[in-house]
Image (tube, rainbow, N blue to C red; front, side, top):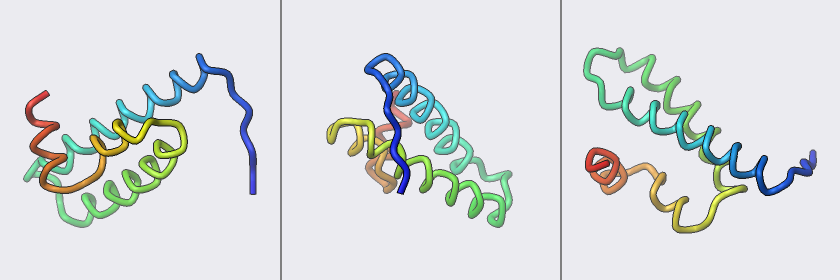
Length: 78
């Protein structure tokens, strides 16, 4: 097990970077031009980023980035 000691500003930056990357992944997953094999790899990356995101974010923000039909609908409205 590894530990990480960061201050509030670094936590906010990490949170921002994870959100930005997950937003891009959600956008790519909706693209019909991307092959399903590539989408599977993208999905695995999203799962890793989401697990990291859960460690630094609030429950409300976590719910916004949970995958599923409701998440994609919310993301499209932004």
